[in-house]
Image 1 (cartoon, rainbow, N blue to C red):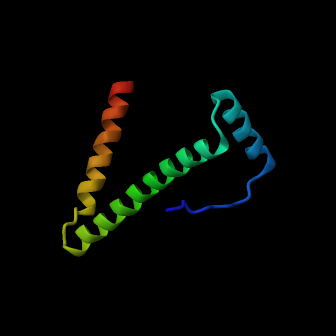
Image 2: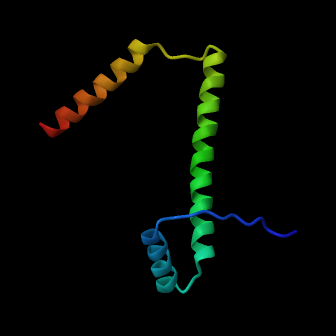
Length: 85
């Protein structure tokens, strides 16, 4: 099965940086673009999945009271200040 072809425009300076990276690593543009796109898609997919899970938890009633969260962060701030002082 043939791989799909993606095409998009970038600023000239970014293309030049990509070319410099490709030359320095003895790899082609495609190698670096595939790696960058894979990393980006993995990171964004994880984030979207985490949000969906959070929404599912909220819909199921698995919530934490706001005052508990505020107290937790207030304690963290106090602990940091105590370590610095």
